[in-house]
Image (cartoon, rainbow, N blue to C red):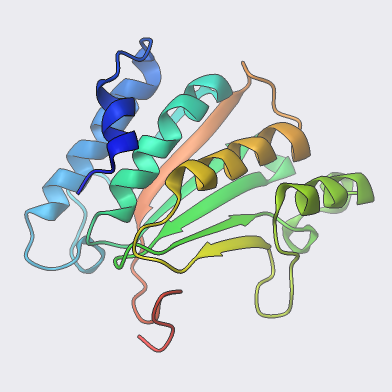
Length: 196
């Protein structure tokens, strides 16, 4: 079921975003192809390519990300979306894991996965804490935020990711964001039902 806010976003006459809209349509086709299967798309081979990817300006990503997260959270599969900015060597990313029960986990890269020249300084850590991220721990090695609910706040999760790309990772509105979408092969517990 589509949330009223999502319906308004999709049908409210938003300005054209050709590159992002084309990519979202491609992602929608991937999800629709997998929805035809009687089991979760995470358990069957993906139609066509195993991954969908695109590169769009941050401003366009910000406009379309809530719709994408809403679609993934309501899909019966387990999906991963990775947003990367800056040079690939910097490894600056935010990733979303949308579970089959609707729960949503978000992570931002921590120093554990960054090479020395690209590690976060204390200023970046302050920004991440100020945005609402939980700090890394032994069990959760990245900065994290989890919504253990069947109806996640996709708008809030999208805002958190985009604000992180802007404020913590220094991406400008016209900077390109590399987007990757793929089905997760992992099953088991979710934030909503950890014992699965």
